[in-house]
Length: 527
Image 1 (cartoon, rainbow, N blue to C red):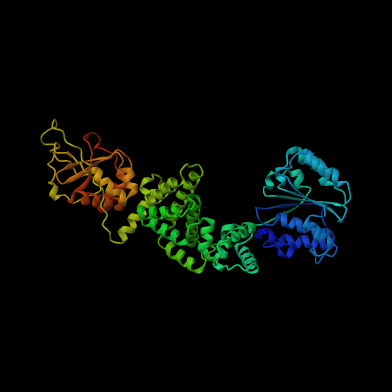
Image 2 (spheres, rainbow, N blue to C red):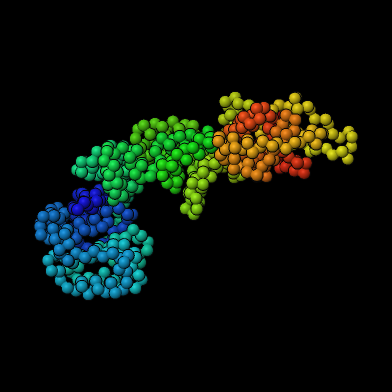
């Protein structure tokens, strides 16, 4: 019968345990010197070797021919413990045996001497799951057990264990295994199993495993089922990750504020069964790498990736300011929190990308700083910045004759596609634009976010102006983005065959709308 890799290649001696030398060397020395404690507590995250070391310890203290504190794995006791024929080593799962009665059974059994081994060893896994009564029942025996009894407790949540238990045990903290150690072990196992594995793929497996060697071997087992050479692309597909190329392209789209390209990438990844939550996690890790490159002199020590990826990271980090990276990290982290409770994870991911590409939709200080930085960059590059004009108050006929000034003719006004032109005195020429539905259908092909914003909108023709009436409060800010204004202008031209000057329809009662503080800043710069 086939045996999965993490069980088949479970270490059989302390020397085979990866990444826990500070623990295995201490245990081996204690066994060699005969100074073995009566109770041990192994703590650490999943897949770091707690149960494995407990089983090796149980064999080592009972081995007939130990070698430097390690079990020989050849004597009848070692073989009996491995195949389960020696019942003096008892492994108990506290998650399903957490009552007082289960602990009482252990206490009663501990009074009997072992049959085949030197010590009766009790391995209690996930010990934090024991009830309060069970902990209290174990206290006395754990403090003064019979000479032939050893306890090994293992847990992933040491903070849930009472201090009275902690004080009676010799504690060992298992660290997360480093990616280098995991990659080395994975390459060794792949070589022994005749699995063709590239080094870059082994590094990616180690990074995905997040310090757990068992998870790494499980992922290697899954990838080996493809029957081909395991490359980073194979690992990414098996783990449901976005490929690095997609991540770099998505971040470039965010930097260029190109929502259309970003949505196309998300659609492609979604069709390839990429998990949206994992995509946001990878995107968060991508920006974290950019942050490290911007702040650390030697980022290679903190980023696990191949040389080509590191080169791309550095090139992309040069295009971002540190403030921009921190802003993106905050938006993605907020999106990940919302994703966990979201009904439709794809929509939540797309909303997060829209926020990344459109800082003007946010009203916090970090978004305003983002907009100011973009203005400064445009000024350095010699790009003319045009501010939205403040709508003038429409002068009513009842006012004095000398108060109003005649507005300039439309031909003399510069084209301002993002805002409505100043209304003329003849306000009775607004004609409904009957082809507005066809324009929205055209926009749907090129700019999906803008289509959603324009839901329920209408348009009017006033001379050579096409004025859009939209009740969505985000429309004035949304249309300021150049790509959205260009998509709208192109759709109108395609439907009508005529180039209209675009604007926002404003009724006289809302002409005195609050001014955008950033627009005021632009006016001051231009003046």
